[in-house]
Length: 273
Picture 1 (cartoon, rainbow, N blue to C red):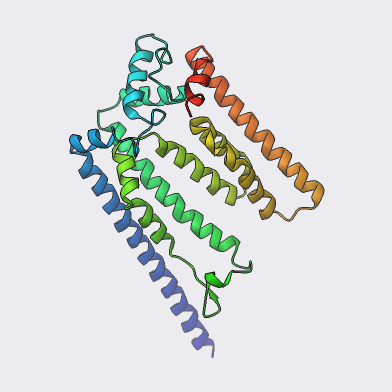
Picture 2 (cartoon, helix red, strand yellow; picture 1 turned 120 degrees about the horizontal axis):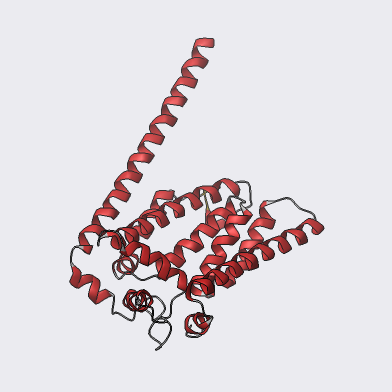
């Protein structure tokens, strides 16, 4: 009997180990294919130039061309927000100026890595959500033969990585990708119940694009839902989230002022949205 139990445990362990290996292989193949696809397409400048001028993908606030113009003005001591050409937050100037000192392909590589990181985080969010809400009641549409339908997290990554619009956005070097990354990081850390990081990334997303301000309420609800709190503690949780959000956002705005020595970026960036 003892030998039988040992064999069962051993077989279960082997199955789990094999599943993990298969999972890693699937992820490696998926991300490898996505990396090679983007890297290959970046080798054709005509594609990136055409996509970078399409209004379906680019706006004045997310245009890489306008960002390079702002960088040129900033590097030559000219206020970047004069003339109405540059409409992006000042921290983009600092980050991309640092990248400009690296080899020429570093910026394209940064976009590819950001896209891959986004897909990886989406897969992890799916795993965390399935774990957190496994005991919650399900809608009929979420059930099959009485059992919950669980989507493989790698499918979510694949749908993101090989979505034509996602690839086009990466190739056009639209800065919206960094807003998307901030939103996904905010969601990821909120599900992990890390309040400080969660609110920081939602504040960062708001700083970059303003509209993610609307995510403040659902993000706060994630923290209150994940914790078993009474009414008084829920109020404290809400105030804590709001305070962290305002503090992080205020810090980013002050840092931006120190960088460009002017508040002109507020109107130039958020006034055109």
